[in-house]
Length: 506
RNA sequence: GGCGCUAUCGUCUAGGGGUUAGGACGGAAGAUUCUCAAUCUUCAAACCCGGGUUCGAUUCCCGGUAGCGCUACCA
Image 1 (cartoon, rainbow, N blue to C red):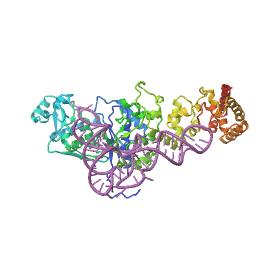
Image 2 (image 1 turned 90 degrees about the vertical axis):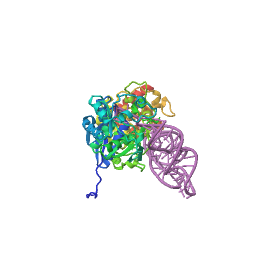
Image 3 (image 1 turned 180 degrees about the horizontal axis):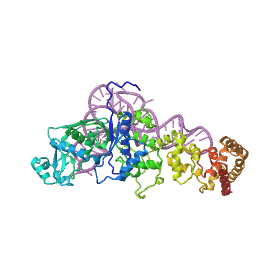
Image 4 (image 1 turned 120 degrees about the vertical axis):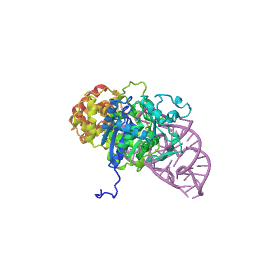
């Protein structure tokens, strides 16, 4: 607003989303991205995407694509992009710095040794005294001889040192150093571990705020140790409560199925903005009872102070279907079982908040993909009739099917019989409808007037008049309002379907 | 096991030393419209347990319990 800058404008935050590309984009990861993004955009800072791909064994290109695909769908942007695997030199430099200061040591214990063998103790493994205390000469000698080693951080063991940091969400954190194991910095193949690479990059990229899942809260003590050993001031930390399943466990593909994948939401017909809105409300609150919020509203309202500390349950009913094939199509999913009711409601809210033109444009590709040829004009006329009747975009297929097909799918002729009526009444209604509809203009008011008059003449209630016609033209009892439906359907189709119904019941 | 974190309706949450503990989703009932949906109204539904501190704790402190996380040369 003001053109004159504040006397001391705070430095623009630099935040990062750092997924490891070992699978599809997880809803929890998407949420972490969103919180970082919201923080960056709210504070006009920089959003960085960094692929933490130091685990050569498990990283896949497909996963990288899946992450991009998900973020693209959500229309989430970032300003800088890095690949950790291309920055190995930086990581090794940091390891070297720490080693030269004597704050790390070589561990020549072969990889994959059991903890029990390492320590001989029954408790938690903390370090291997033999390796930690190895003389510099012997260490150098064995390294020079080509013996492989891992580089371990020499965590202070004496003096009752405390490692501490302040978390923007969880407050003051401290842990005594003696409870932290001598974690690895470099693997015996020379590759950096996550802890090292992450800290080296965060320092190098001048990350100001690390906003990530609470599963890293305890790791942060190690990170603080690394930053300080390498001569950097640790950034600010903000840990996010985890997303958990109704059984309280962390969401996982294995246990919980497709509900944990962002693409499931996309394919089921969620609006990206609704999905983002839903995710934001898990573990964060604007504290003003607002629920349905758009992108900009979220950006404006976001602050780290609104983040909650307890894990949030994604409240779905159906866990993975063990015996369904490996590729469940969106049509297989029962939305009420698969998705959190609140997500569904929010999506419906966003659908209704969308201008008809926009909604129509989003619906059309889905309809076409299902094999129906439809003009944008026709879709635009159908959209207002179903927009209050669908919670997911995909539901357009079921809600407006009778607009798309030439031939109505078979239905039970008994459906044509109105409340408190019989087949004879249905027949009379339909025959009369055929007569009057043949001559009336297919416009809402004219249809309304004509059909109500016809009902009076027949001595039936309006509802008893409308119901058989509705079933005749829609093929089912529950459908959008009749006059609008007839208007969009057109006279020819309506008359033909009424004829068909007369044949069925006659 | 060790260490860390957490605990308000079924779920997401607001609140906070004195409140009828608020909202939303979902549920139930009703109103309304040509059905359905939407909308509106109403109802049921919560401060984990035990000790302190205090005139007074759901709120602050301690303990317990439970849940989650970390405890890899995974991230």
